[in-house]
Length: 307
Image (cartoon, rainbow, N blue to C red):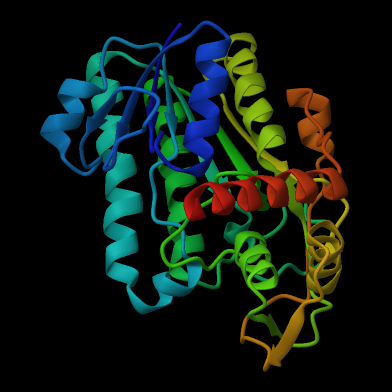
């Protein structure tokens, strides 16, 4: 199958393209930066003329390209709305014009905001508390409207705290790689509040597998809008994550507590029952195994860089 991936040079995109190629698919990557392993069309998804040219001659688009920092979105809402919402519209329009009808994309737990109850179910209230979450909800709305108006097949995958090897951001704000680096280098480990906030950490291989299963679902149930939580259903506290990293590295963390951040839900995890029943997916990698693999990757990478 011919597949287009937007944002295929990022953390998840790199893993996804590897899996798609291994499964025998022909993949085109569109990103603002090159993927070292696969040819990349360097382009901004907001460039409608460029998307009309490049989003063509394929059966499926995986849309991963978006700005993802919730905190930054509060400071720069216009930038997030422009890139995430207008970029998605640009791609959907190119698909409509060029007759590509299947759109699978990375949504987020951020669409829910502060949940009224946990575990969160897909049809629970969605009330984002930052512009990032709002853009993801708007992207879902755009997709569902194209399913209704133009006969698209749309699948939104709402995953929670994605982590794993090769996760690099500049600056690094995501908890797992930041904690690993801080503990490994003996730096202070920044913890907001008492560290007992519960979050759902989902390993990258499990998320990639959900994307491949979404391809199968798109064939089986076309011209529908599907949306799924991708959750382990086993939340862990920040202190538990720190403890697992300590054990794997063999170093004690120098934890420094800071005041709780406003709008930071105490408990955030979801039900994955719908994904099990409809998508045939459930998380397989335990937190212990996932943290070990992630730590091993980063330590090996840092050793390579220092030699």
